[in-house]
Image 1 (cartoon, rainbow, N blue to C red):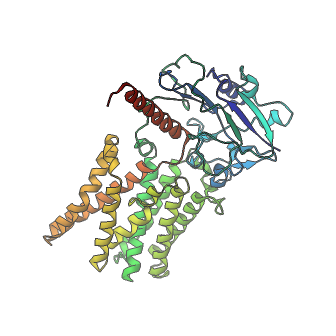
Image 2: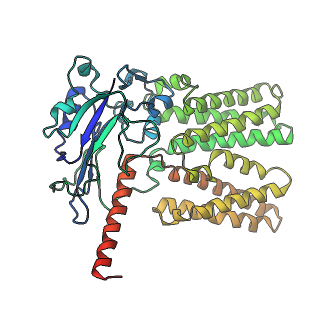
Image 3: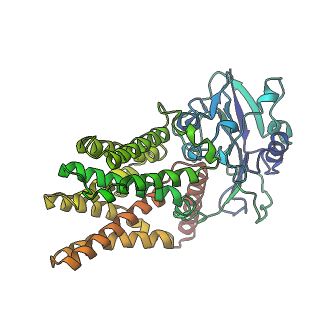
Length: 456
């Protein structure tokens, strides 16, 4: 028998007793059980819906399969347990989970999440959140299979959440007093147009962007060397540059972790974790770069170039495993495309560079909505868009000065596109799906009222 939750939205009054009980019982940070308020200001066109949600203890938990440190286990009753003593604080599980269950504790550095009050349930006592609910909106359920029909706004990524939702589409729920403006971290209120800027992730995780730029730079150097069949840097005193850049990339990645001393756990889950495979490939590429410095010629350039290409693919797979949208896979800012495109600048024939420039231009045109986003994303988008034609304008005079200027503009465009990749990276998350569904429903109701009133 699997254990999970049944939630009845018609009975929830957003008293937050379940969230408080979770904090008091387990000593977890506020927001481990999130209270989503859908139309918490009781706008007249749509109903008020509240949702209490923590971990859904999925049958195929994406957090556990993607964790590079093997910090998750699944108990016999289906409870997905996180072990803080194994966690290195990479936050990758927060990308993988579409239900916003794992949350990083900024103070302690590691992930915290609902564990179904394992100590209580093994003794036959219901979870603290369930016993604290005064209306019976939240209940623990034991069944062989959770296959209930989910609302349209509930993200379905095939991981089979152990939860039943009732009356979550009811437009006639009780009128609720609007929530206070001050909310605990992890709790959200949803009103039309409340979507956060797409550059928030980039600002928060700039270290990941820097890490990927350094890895792409080294990969390009090694791929160009492979295509030329010679060492890229002939001068012995400068052969340490690829290894130096890789060392910098690894230092940045370790600094990104909440618990850096446990970074050695990053490669424990190579079989199922894209992040583990990425780190393993980065370590291998750094070792190859070191050998290229201390023992030049020991490894054939073609092998190093091939390893560099595989490293770029492993970097992309970390993001593609979390955001499987076609738009991201066609994004010209992905590491694989960026690396090959950069390499075409240094090799012949020129037609290859022209073809990749055209592909990049098509990708930029497809992402025209970025021009309507927040200021940072808009600036990056115009930088990427203007760099493409400007490079060809600077190349045309065929002088040393303009060629150098063209290279600078070309690199600036590539970096801007890579940063845009992070802005456009949006793994499925229930916060976004609730907000988008509510906004769409609200606009539909407004359009209906305009039509009924004869207003165009």
